[in-house]
Image 1 (cartoon, rainbow, N blue to C red):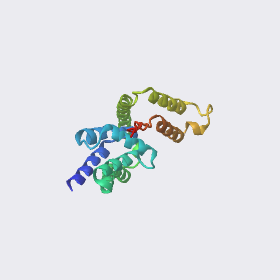
Image 2 (cartoon, helix red, strand yellow):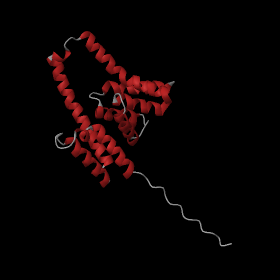
Image 3 (cartoon, rainbow, N blue to C red):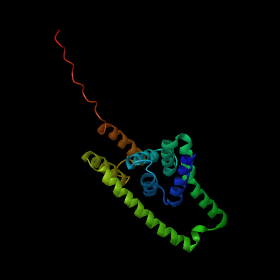
Length: 195
């Protein structure tokens, strides 16, 4: 039972202090899940994160489910997702019930401007860590440059589907399957004993 409570409380904390979603979740997951709890390694979390990006739903929820499922099976995944979603759901409900025209309040606008800057810094920190951990080989840099060039190209130059994130992710996955596939080692041929 203690393990389930730890999963719920840890993901409540991640959900409470994650603003901006997407890459902004990684620093909090790194602090709470990787460093403090040692429930997963950064490479493993990044693999979960990559799969979470191409699955339907919120990245943070999907990532929480993967980690919770790894720790305590389906119910662990359920608790991790609930823990991650609960703080945001409570805040949004409270804002909708008690504060009318929230976005029009100057203090709220100023607070969100500050939060956007902080989220940008957190995303930059994550990108730097990804670059350090990923760009060790020339083929990785080639795939990165291919995706980057096609994602920033104006739509009139190439067909729209080629600049679509879905197309770029699928092509990158296919290329990764080819260039990172490990070849099976050849077994030495057995020689007869001549008898």
